[in-house]
Length: 367
Image (cartoon, rainbow, N blue to C red; front, side, top):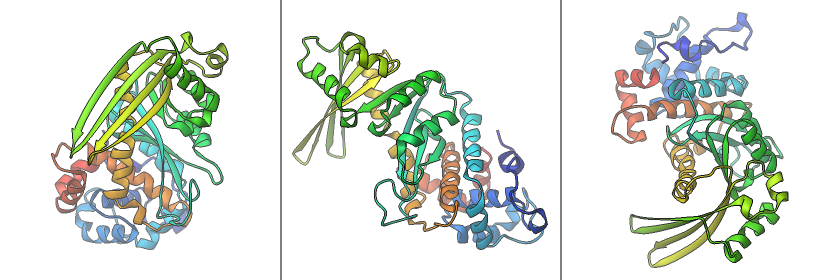
C-alpha cells in the first residue's frame, strides 16, 4: 500500500534536463493526481489546487520554488512518455488486487472526443482499456495508432498484463484468430463477440443454432425490470467440437463453446429483439455465459461513463503532444482510488467531498 509520494511516483525517471528542473517530476504528478481526485479537470485547476492547498501539500512534498504554473503542468504532460504513467496505473491495480486469476477482464475502446471533436471512427485519440470487472478498476491501456484500429492495439495491451487464469471478453472488432491464440498462449480464456466481420464462422454458428437437429446443451433466462424498462436475456450454449468443422477448430485455438444470447427489451410498449453470438474457450453453464456477457458492459458503465460524466473528459481540449493521453491515464488512476473509498456516496460526491475535506483526500490518494 502506498504510504508516500515517492511510493506513488518516485520511480518515474525525470526526462528533463537536470539544470532546468525547478519542480520535481513526482511532485508535479502528485499535485495533478490530487487535483483530479478533488473535482479538478485541467492544468489551470492543478495550479489553483497547488496554491489553495499549499499547506496540506507541504506535509508530503517540498515546494521551495512555489507552485508550478499551468504552463509547467501542460509542458510536462505533453512531453512525458505515456508508458510511464500506464505502468503506474498497472502497478497500482496489481498492488490492490494482487492476482488476476479467476477474474473477468473486459477489453474495449473509447474515443476521447475533446481531442478532435470533428474526427470520425478511430481517427483522433482512441484508447483501448483493460477493465477488471470484479474489482471495478482499470489495469492497463494502449493508444490506437493513427490509421489503425483495435485489432492491432489489443495484442499490445494483452502483452502488457499477466492474464493467467482470467477470462477475457472483447467485442466483435477484437474477434481475431491471432488474438484468440494470444489469450490461450498467455494462460487465459476468451469470450469473443461474433459478427459478420468473421463471415464464415458467423454463418456457421448461426446455422447451427437455427437449423441444427442438436438441441442447445443448456439454456438460461434472466429478466430485469428497472425504471420502467424490462430486459430479458435467454442464453443457449452448444459444444463447438460436436458441431464445427475441424478447420474452424484449428483456426480458433481453444474454441470449446458456442453461445447465443437472445435479447428482448420492452420499454414504452415498444419491444426490441436482438440476437448475438459468441465463441469461447471456456466450458461452463449457460448461466455463467449469460452473466459474463452482460458483465462485459461494465467497462462502459463503470469506466467510460465516469470518464465522460464524472471527470468531464470529452470537454478537455488538450491536443498537443502526449497531454491528453497522460491526462486520461491519471484520470483512471484517480478513478481507481476513488472507487476504493468505503463512503456510501456517488463518485461525483466523493470527488466533491475530497475537494472540501483534506483528511478524506489523503485517505483516497494513499489508499
